[in-house]
Length: 183
Image (cartoon, rainbow, N blue to C red):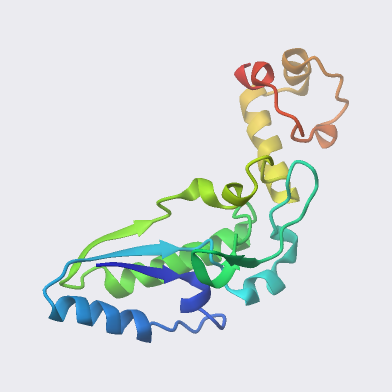
């Protein structure tokens, strides 16, 4: 039996986890002698999360900001979730994953917890012509990665054929070039 633990359904109110439906389904599975796989779906995020962290909405390479909506296969909504490059959002998503794992990890019928089996789908699946994420948190992580990779701004300038004066001037390219990424 494959079941979904969608974040927006399980944690409808911050810090209040609703497992009644999933508990019933897991119990039915066990009663029928079926093994259970639970998909843990954080990209169906709770609506309170978007209100709490609107600055972590996904931003496309064209500057479009995505608000929560429903995906066809996610009736509880909250798709595509928020960018987990914001540390507070990542912490809350990880807490959700941990709560589900704690509750079901040792259940007799459980075969596996399937965590993010399709991470490429948030939100690229519905926006195949766009690149995500360009929110300020992703930009900060990108610049930190560049600092680690190149060490000095002069090295980045040399590799990218740029004339940046400060690391504050560096942003992720809006139209990626494989030549630049290969360096």
